[in-house]
Length: 170
Image (cartoon, rainbow, N blue to C red; front, side):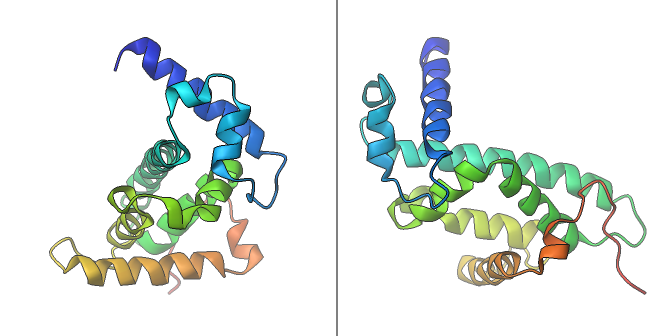
């Protein structure tokens, strides 16, 4: 892929996310969003390829945010990895609402190669809830439970500032 192709893909992704912003439900079909972007079909032949690119973008953002959170929490004697990873996921989702909505609305259409299972495993291992040497299915189930808890967390915890260190209560 040339730099021109890279930048063009990024422009189409940004335009699709801008198109998705006015739809708070995230229910506009991905192919419709792609068709609204001039040249979108030239860059991404179909919605499935666009979804892969959107998932890749989400994972990059999430990995970066989790990495920063863990660097901070691991330096604290009473740091809590679960809280740090949860706060990182919430902050990423809050800062990239359109992207998260699109991925959630189209979760069943994302290829198994870049499935949401990879996100669940990332969360489980990063939070210290699972180890890499455990069976993939176990890690995935733990990550699913963690992600489910993230979605049902009380609003006062969801709005917590990520700049505040996550501590274990004594």
